Length: 305
Length: 305
Image (cartoon, rainbow over all chains, first blue to last red; front, side):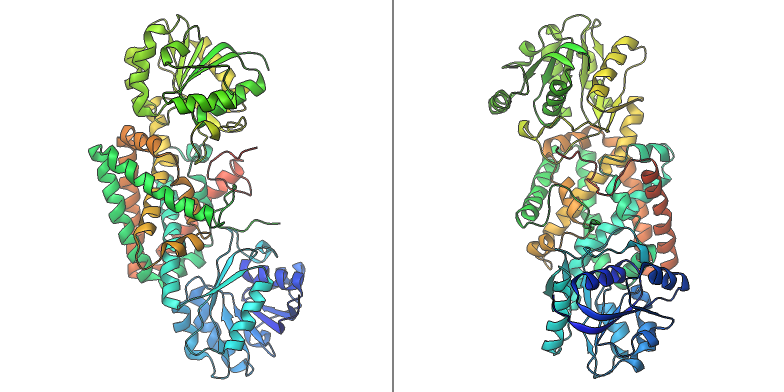
């Protein structure tokens, strides 16, 4: 595959940035990959694993001469990092991020971005419940969606170039408006994650069922709730704090709906339950027909390989 | 493996009974397997697939001469079937069921069981989102739990024999009190399923996010919700109607807990969210350490193979 960028700077060296580095290396997509992480331990790990060509003690140093800069830090940390690197971005550079929320990132990062820089926010719909520099792998983005939310009037060539990079990593790329992205993700990802966290928390508190029983018999619907409830706490805290409105909106609808089902159970309304459970089958069929699932589910998480 | 029963009668020929038949055949656990299903279409399918040695038009006929009778029909249908077969059970026969709820089955079936018959309710913690005679496979129970809830004073030899059958199919067998079983399952299976059904229903209703978007971007937490929400509607209707109290109890705790998290989101209480998400990681670690999960999750469902 042809080289897409000469010098890529990764700010943050966790699961996503690490996987990007591995993938760019495997597919020859970048000339040089520079990396920075706030923690000295993470920088040392990145050095040892060797997925970046150079490791830098500051973000400002890492972005020197880069034609692509990727912010791969928790959404809550984006603003400070953007402020730090802004004076060091060269004209014509593309700046992107991989945050799970887009409007909040635009609000936090946008004001710092020089006019000469192309700011194109993005979000790979890929991940695992693991985090940190050791968790990355080159195939994480293969056959996954990577959403771009370029601002109105964004440079077409710059958008196309970023798209080529992501497609080079095996991703499918779509473009949408930032606010719509946040609503879609609230439905397909953020609210399901909050629900899973909650269910696992409930199981943890129940005195009448021992924790060892929960663990032992988890292979009955509950186990994959625990998988997502093991995701990075910092990342998810920031997701909920920064996609607050859409998440609360979907959560409100969820509890409303849950109460109706709860009432049907209490009243013994079997027809209501049966009809509801029959309708939900249709979405599942749609997903299978769209080729978005295979026999072995993985809760949306890439498999190492 | 040694033969455990001479003649097994399966009442109901769906996923669980079909898988039992395949497994008994593979491991030589039964001399003859007789089967009955209410629907002529299912009986014909069973005949064609050939997983039973004889197919019978009535349950009464199927149980003739059987030393093990398995009720593998939805929980709501157990009482009528038990009443029908009771006069035809031979003395010393073991009668079991594979319902997901145990106290309700005991209440429905128990009164019909002759004194000379050993009634030992059971529940395999295994399944897929598929149903019907074509969905069964021999390895469904391998390394899965199969819970027995024998009544007080149950015949030890009969319990041991049933346990041998299930272990012969590859299952791990545990014994517990029926009411406790229902509470444990409400936590690890029934409530998670209801929540998944609800979340899929919400996504279906949201106008601002198109159904095609939900399907397209489902690989982000939502997809496995759709998998469980595609489970058999009749079975799940009966589960909720018959394990009403435990499910409502756990659901009450769930919404309580969800409201606390929802409030934390609304108030921007990041510390609360972070602490909560950190605690739920511990349960996940426990499950991995207990060997109850592997790298590729399958939402508690057996994989064909």
